[in-house]
Image (cartoon, rainbow, N blue to C red):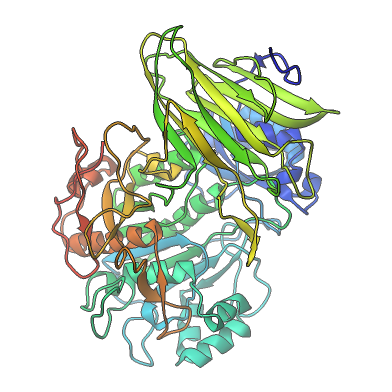
Length: 630
């Protein structure tokens, strides 16, 4: 018996998240904003050359904003558009993916700053961090610990709000606010101690949230990451520190820090900050090359994107690869993610043949979940497998089986409640409306089932993953609001480790998993598993992120100078590894092509699953010791 609530299969080969956002006119994406007049950040992939597209957009008078200094030889470009322009823009380009909207619309693009820093010799290394937060006045980011020591920061770009007053200026991308090298030098000259730093954050810098975090003894993510990667060395070694006690090349590097925005109030449909991350990488490279055309540029991204394809085709992933290929002196390291043992992913193989049993997962939606929910599956398509999917509501009958290139939907009064889409590119996505909250629809909580059968002769590897949700998610501090998770898997392994961050699926960046200083083993949340469980991508390096199993996290800089906080996860491991790479390569030869980076770091493709060494912040790394997972 088939559940009659589902539509008949219809042809479909669109971006599943764009399709779902359009189903409610982007109301869930923009939250409390008025979607019809807001600007939507997009990544586009050109069908032809960029100049031809601009001419077509100008002729059609579409509401689109560009960056004038974007490299024209890249196939992926960030743009801003109003919703009225989307249909015609989609017809002119090869592909579109939307990003996280901002609370304020982008302004006309400013010219890049002519600031050239201190005028001294160009730095040998420029370190960039793309993260969330940042305390730019912290003494850990200066040339020394002396009271009058100048800062090493060349730029701090806060993408979360517009420049209104004080030393902030509008950055070239047209949104957010930036402190350039001159402004940072002047501010740090006035911030001689922690109390003066706090006063500046509360006053003219309009960064009261940093002072609040400091008063609470909390962690500022970007500050900890940047200190771990390139902060001044410790005055004395102590256990559990995220950085060494001896001066090194990283502690002399010039710095660029970019803070990426989070979600909007009332936002029920999550969106990755893809445009913002790409703009940040372009900004770091532009500032670095202006100050040091031949420097090694190492960029750390301790942010994750869960939703999207695992084959490297996500436009942000493609763009990072293209920027690294364009500039061989640019190396990007990415935190692999902390979902290794969360009930968010199932994987294994789907047996082939008409008599083979389907595999399935039980996906529990909590009755208080106020956000859209997405369950995504992906598989390799080289052998042209014939996989089909169906969904069963809690207590209901199954839907029709859906094959590649088709979609079924459940609507009520013209409103989309659920859609199951299967793409020929090797992806399937089940999208559901919120169970609770302001956008609540008639979606039942409880266990939903997604089943997959293989009509091919050979077994096919399959991964199924809850996208964006967290089982311990909360909208407000101390107000828990649980989101969806996988409760059971049939024919698949529930829970698998590896590089769950989609950004780690590119050709050139280095993905970093977490380990422990105490036992020199991978941390439970990112530990490699045995060869029975396939996984997308892989962890190239392991680095310390925990002092011990019972002492999680490593100590790094807090918001105010002289304060210490403990943070854990692959967000810490990635900058630990990045610091080791900076120190190993600062003075030596570097690859001349992006595809040589992994080989230069001793990362090779392994034929069997083998443990990786855990890089430590207190011991120099000899290149060539690492072996990548298959």
